[in-house]
Length: 78
Image 1 (cartoon, rainbow, N blue to C red):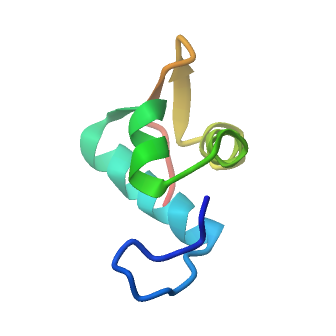
Image 2: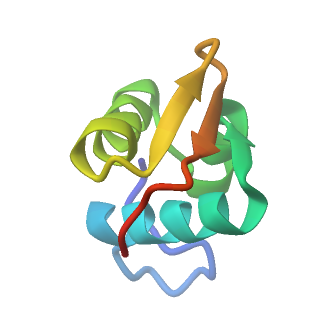
Image 3: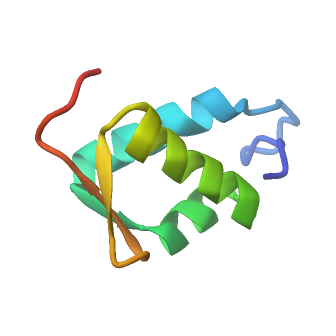
C-alpha cells in the first residue's frame, strides 16, 4: 500500500480507513474479488492478506470463497 491519497493531496490513508472502506464496499456489493480490493485500495500482497484476516477472522464479516472472492456474511455487526 502506498499510503498516498488517490486524490493527489498527499494525505496518508491509514490501514483502519482502508478496512472501513473495504467493509462498506463489501456490504454494498455482497461479494468482491481480491483483485478488485488490490486495485481499489492499491494494496500489495501482504496488505491484502492483512485485510482478509481482519474481515474474515477479526471482524467475522466475510468468508473466503475459493481463495478468490470475499463474501459478506448475514451475521455481522458494525
